[in-house]
Amino acid sequence: MGIATSIACAIHCALLPILMSSLPVFGINIIHNDFFEWGMIGLAFSVGVYSLYHGFIKHHRSLVPVLIFSAGFVFLVLKQFYRSNETLFLIIAVTLIISAHFYNYRLCHKSKCASPHHVH
Image 1 (spheres, rainbow, N blue to C red):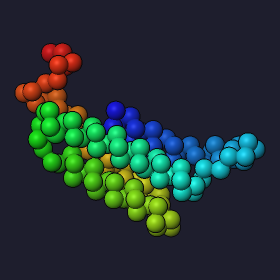
Image 2 (image 1 turned 60 degrees about the vertical axis):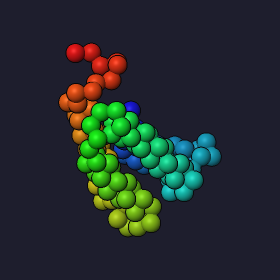
Image 3 (image 1 turned 30 degrees about the vertical axis):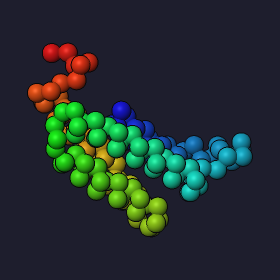
Image 4 (image 1 turned 45 degrees about the horizontal axis):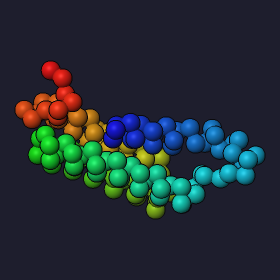
């Protein structure tokens, strides 16, 4: 779920300039719309915290994915305040956040305490 949300965020940021050209025709403006951007950041944070918390508590007890996610999230927030470095901060943020979810996923599957839905 965390990886999917991170990828959706990356797609949103990559496709937004393309979609931007058609949205004003419909009276919609989401580029640099602070309400929309903070909403997406909040969604990414909520899903990320839920996924990493579940992995930490139920499976592996490793803080490494949490630390990687936290670093990525710092860059995600920084892009909102430093617009001149927005693309660089976004690339770093997405890379770190996806890496955190992927590492969490790997740790969960390597753990001895597999979830009840895990099939061997």
